[in-house]
Length: 177
Length: 272
Image (tube, rainbow over all chains, first blue to last red; front, side):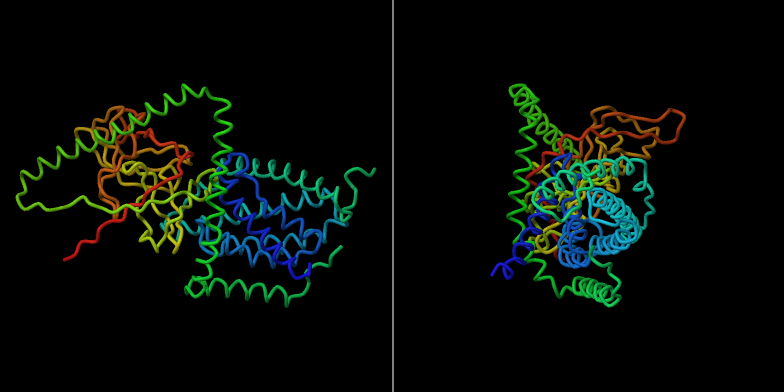
């Protein structure tokens, strides 16, 4: 019975996160930099394998695309590419599931997603307005990505601590010397 | 550790799936599904947005003196209304002079308004976009102006879906709006958003005199955007006398962080 309703719980959970990211966090200054979807999908990828984030990207990405100003499919494509790359990176660089691997992967995912969104936005401006708007790659973007990394690092760390207290799926690299 | 995704079949299936999703979206076949998802999510988004405002207001009330803030808000409302009245009077005076010269003048300034509310935001270092709960099913289409208080323009519809729309605010970096400054020369120009911080007017001829606090309105030269919607007032003028053009920054009377309720102006289509 639990197996049958588990997909419903997962769907509901992700729907809640989409609503939180678009409508709740976006209006509160510091929280607007937090990406709960990316953090959750990285956790899922590290624990269960990156096939699942790719599958979830196909399901959730189009919903987030509906509320995004970039052309439809940009977010889905970004996430597919990010999680495919993260899979390669994780298996080549890391040997276990630990705090450091989670934090590094989340940071890597956010930077990659940020760059891809900028590139898609740049091409959208060319197609829609015939404008080459290089200002979207300005130094203000650098400040923005730094904020994103710092705030998501804090949220990822807190999430890891909470998850670590209730699960044995992570190596205790944080505290084991 | 879980094995890496080496199976090229999986990757091919993922790519084919996404191509299919794009195709179904752009041909409109999955539009009923998209509309259903938006309809289901809308109440939750409205509730979440209300909660976010309460959280924001909580912090603001703690740090600000409530009495002074209330008095200040009241005075701002009165000032904003006076600015709208003043711009309407100036336009009425112009129209009166024009009508006296044109005996067969029969233009109307009527338009319909569709009221809606903000259900989400998309904000980064240069863009300022809001998501509203009205779309093509409510006759809202790309390029339509979005106003508050029936007189202040805050942006234009950037992308309209069936049941929701994305609105680009006028202080978004890529936002451009055809405006007129209500000075003696009735200077026309383009108001350009500046990295989400403000709005400026560029390429103002040096010989055209503009003063601080001159009202800036929409010029009506853009499709679907009527003349007379208030943008703001001239806050600062830049540019040396020897330059050909000068610039001006616009003081926006609306706090874009506090917008909840909006209206979209639906232009009347003239029947021949």
